[in-house]
Length: 131
Image (cartoon, rainbow, N blue to C red; front, side, top):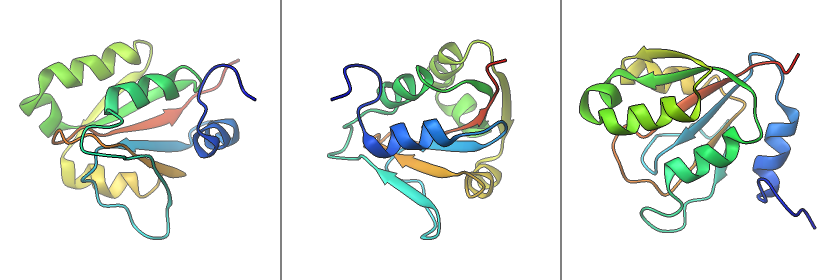
């Protein structure tokens, strides 16, 4: 039995399979996810698990060189935008309109759906390299 880190089998497998420049999206309960994408749905009830908790867990295991956020998050919930940036201090930050964010999310290897019910609580992680 694994004793630390991400315990969810699908998330652990996804992180281990990521290569340089691969994308992974972590989203709130409302983001639309196309059927053809690998959906890792860990939502249990509204708010559980929370977006920040899941994002921190993934960040502890994945080298991220860039994060992509919706402009609307920066404008409508600057505290959450800052919290995300604080998790990924060394990553470049790119803001795009939410419609473009949704299109970019479809380029992800997978989308992790949380129970978060805060609008625009979504991030696309672009994988870096450890050397």
